[in-house]
Amino acid sequence: MTTPEDKSLLIVEDDNPLRDRLSRAMESRGFSVRSAASITEGKAIAKEAPPAYAVVDLKLDDGNGLDVVELLHQIRPDSRVVVLTGFGNIATAVAAVKYGAIDYLPKPADADDITAALLAPPGSKPKPPENPMSADRVRWEHIQRIYELCGHNVSETARRLNMHRRTLQRILAKRSPR
Image 1 (cartoon, rainbow, N blue to C red):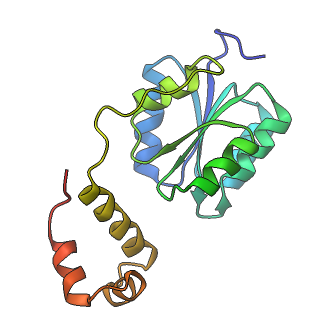
Image 2 (image 1 turned 45 degrees about the vertical axis):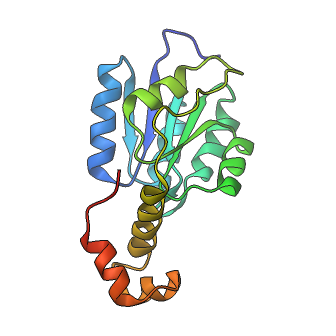
């Protein structure tokens, strides 16, 4: 069972700068952090020393982060796992919870949000966001996500979004809305 003294934390994230920044932030909050850049590394660390807490990216270079969540839940059922993703949808949120995650946060999530999710009492309900994203920002985020999925290919992105290529180029040239 997770005790207040056991603050071991596994971070599985393939984005090196994000993983390093998050590791430092969580260490400053009293966690004993081990990090991994892949599912293989994450599973090895989980088997070697199952952590009390974990933060796992959903989409990793070598597969689906839910594989790590599932293994952690099998090895240490009381482990509190938060799934991070830039590709969130209802189906993956439900799957994450079924595999044993206690929360599902969209990127970019800051260390305070992650800490609050990890340390929240079981059964507690999250507060609604104070500053929800505007509709323009949600649209911009969606376009950016598709643009990245298409390998920054403007023509392919425009085709997938059913948008004229020049219109997409103008949108991509602008700053993100607030």
